[in-house]
Length: 251
Image (cartoon, rainbow, N blue to C red; front, side, top):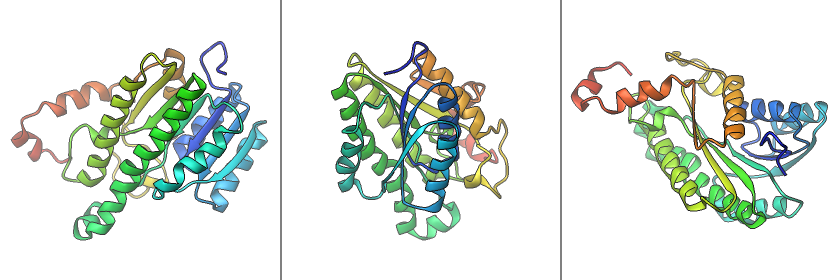
């Protein structure tokens, strides 16, 4: 169960090597989370992440999970939930893709969509049903400001995040009143391995800053969190720009 401050004592991370997810897990373990499941493709990076959290005092388990294999999600996640209640599921997997390459290779573009959206729909629904069955818990989904409006520079990635964001909002509405809290997190440009080598956007942030915002959102039981918060107004303005004007922006 969550502690008196609304923070989880048990955590399941889908996308166990995500820098944002690990920053969040570290923060929550320091705050009292004691059981952590890291689900992802088996790799040295996944085991290293588990070892890091164990060194902080958490009881950490790993599980083989593949976003691109939705047929396995019920079995894999069902086994985790069968071990005991999970206070929070953090859906943190996703890929950026390569816009220029993916426009020329539809199969690669579809892989971005399947990872970021359809895989998340499957894992999100399975997790939501398990949380609802236990009668409590939070489902936190990492979206992106890229989903707020399609940009020429990354519309394949942005469209997948737009779908994920809309799905998460609808799932939150469907679960309202069940005891399950759903929160969508919309970071801007995050300095991480995924964005290494890319030109940094204004209002760039870090995995640690996103983790801090997630913790605050959990305490407040927020339904949507922007990181940094100023992006909420910026994206509202961009979303309402006439299309002709928006096209002329170097975004």
